[in-house]
Length: 330
Length: 283
Image 1 (cartoon, rainbow over the protein chains, first blue to last red):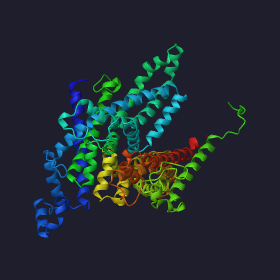
Image 2: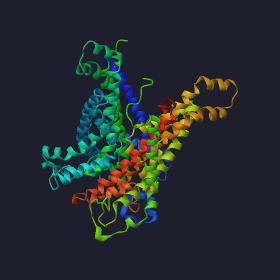
Image 3: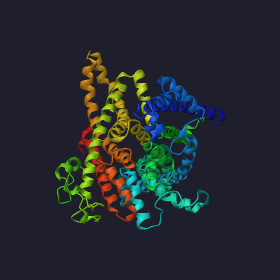
Image 4: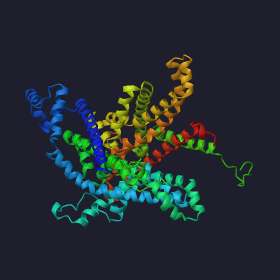
């Protein structure tokens, strides 16, 4: 991979990211502008009865709400690009720092869930595909089909009932024991609190990757080159190692990176059930308590997150598959 | 393998019969769910303080809640409501998807470019975040859920319909039709519709489970239906408050009903797809 090609690849990705974020900003702005929620009311909150129409007028003028939509959009976009994402009403902090803190909490959970679901899904998919039609295969398939249509929040609820209420081996809520200062939380405690949410997310994420891996492996095992390898006396393990893995890995990695979008959505629900103070929980709070700046910020951030996942998948292609390597020999 | 005698004594069903049976089972189950709220009556919804917090038994298969209401009745009412909301939203979504897919496929040019671009934007945001955002922006409530679900589920169906139309449009018999001087409308009616209708039907049915799950998720986190309308998501959210007391059935049983309903829709959709596709219909 040459440097010039790498730069061109990165450049084209950045341009597309810019276009995407532009589209998301237009979309979000129009949606929020058309909504029946009055920004003045949202700002004033509980003191609504104490201000008169003149004061409302003043607030609206100060914020430029009397200007046409295009003008407002440009003003907003300029601030946004400069890194002023506004102040979160419920946390009383700049939106960017709220997102930063919350994402840090979510990131560990998401990373564990992502790795676990990827590895387990691949493993189960290989077992199911290698022993197609066996009881093992049927069991794995049943699991995947049921989990694929199970409501995320209900699975979280079930695990909470079993592990936190009945067995009492997992904490019932939050990211740290209640009453402990953030500075005093040990690594063990933090891990203890994020393990169950992470496991919930991963057992749901396993379903699709296991089914796809199984399908792909069965395709490979029915191919002519595998028949030839068998005729030469290659064992099943050898066939999977030398012929299966190479063909399975690429779609699996794409799927796993593309699943970041669903993982993010799952995190919203799971964090809600476990009362885990991550970005997902902040999303719900922002929507429930009309915190428009925070909600818009999170929408942007999630678009960035999903895009990063897709770009990494494209990049992984180049590294793994010699046939489509950037600037490779043609 | 032709002419091999059937070894088992019992007459076995062929695949077509199994498919038809699966469709019947799915349809009856779902019809039962939708109609259940009118059939079983409201008696189970009345508070009965002598029968509070009872675990599942023969009299109350889903147990009773903290007011002594029968959880089976409540779950069926909630599920019926959720299914109806989901049906409405998914139908609107399917209409949007079909018209945009048809427009993109037939008109081409910049219309196609804009619609494909819109689909790309929808796919670049986490679905749940988009749902929350739209539900919030239109003011929440039942109306918010329906609009949010309707506006976000059309993308995959639009893609499928667009691809189908593009494929049919480039087929030889359609070109021949053009050459024979048939009008666009005639071609649309006689060549497009027969291809698009089955896709639409199956696409619509497979949209339902997504719509219902997302409706339940929105209601669960409190952005969807109001607590006065006990949809399945609301019932599950309520059960969260009673979790630590060990009343497990409040959360487990309604969720199981939701899971079964979603599976019934999947069963119905997948088998209908097999039946409508000429390649698999005569198994």
